[in-house]
Amino acid sequence: MGKISLEVNGRKVEKEAPDNTLLSTFLREHLQLTGTHIGCDTSQCGACVVHVDGNSLKSCTALAADVNGSKVTTIEGLETNGKMHPMQEAFKKLHGLQCGFCTPGMVMSAVDLLQKNKKPSDTEIRDWLEGNICRCTGYQNIVAAVKEAATKM
Amino acid sequence: MKDFNYHSAKDSKEASKLASSSSAFLAGGMTTIPSMKLGLATYKDLIDIKNIKKLSGIKVSGKSVTIGAATKHVEVANSKDVKKAIPSLSSLAEGIGDPQVRNRGTIGGSIANNDPSADYPSACIALNATIHTNERKIEASKFFKGMFETALKKGELIEAVEFQIPEKSSYQKHPNPASRYAVVGVYVAKHKSDVNVAVTGAKSCVYNDKEMAKALSGNFSSSSIDGMDLDSSDMNSDIHASAEYRASLVVTQAKKAVDAC
Image 1 (cartoon, each protein chain N blue to C red):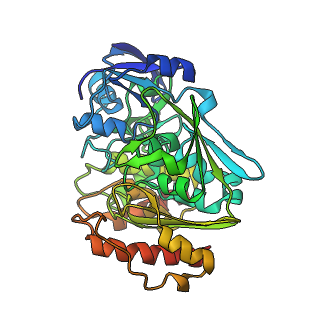
Image 2 (cartoon, each protein chain N blue to C red; image 1 turned 180 degrees about the vertical axis):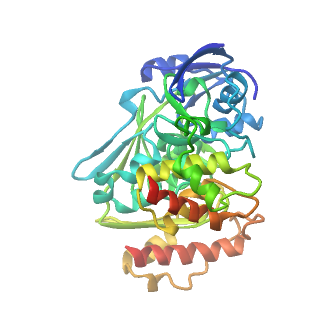
């Protein structure tokens, strides 16, 4: 048991949690931020991607203790005053989702990509989304959405 | 995942003091955490070494590139110094897993784990690396002992990996399309006095293919290993590739590497 102090979506949180608590569990069960999804739970599918200190990571494969003191952004933290983030808008506009299960992770990964590469090519987008799996096979529109968002960000 | 005690060590001394027969060092956790979640590994204590400043960073001297054990793959991939000194090493780092894995995974973790399909062990063999631990220096050729087995003793902590800068080198892997682990990866490096052909993914542990290295020492051209018939009797055979296919891939990837040098 240890104290976990994080800044999540701009809000300071401090909670006791067992040492074996995964970051994904901490977000979903201790903070009720269920926008971060658990898909495979084996660090393959990327549904659980969040940002820690500005970089994307798979929250099912990090301990909460192990990111103690960090700034975390989840899908819930992307909107500003009720207005969707340009990446979310683009996914909506271009049908970059079907069932939506992979979407939080896709969006968080894609936002990280555009932070590092403002005008990625199709190949660069596909390479970057290597660790995000969509089983509705909607990659075509996902790539289109990331390109669209790149023009708005 | 079974319960354990998490410790964050301030320095190598504290880390090795905390180590016991039922502990593990935690760096990026890209293998340790999934293994623990699957119940393949259980530890009483996890000793986080990420916050030990001395273990992160890249130093380039005239003859070598030294990378701290807790340096992340993304840092090696993006380092201008590494790109200049050993471009094949930064492109190897860029091809590990996916961006999220590269944002967390570390070089020390990769070689301590010694997965038979991991990328970094081949770089260590090809680039005549020296593994610096808190106790001694170990030559790469004596470090990788077998499947998931290394020369590390309990509580011994890798602090840095020192790579010799080659005249030219290239790493070519045939990745598993799902995991990006190497079905077969070949790292060819031409040094002043020798050539190494380090192979990962093909056998239970990374190795230097002496037969190809000898042929390339005589004539550093892909034609000198073209059509080489390697013994596949101790190569891995699984749903991804048969031993015979792997043997053929080793030659193909080695030729690609030589051509790319």
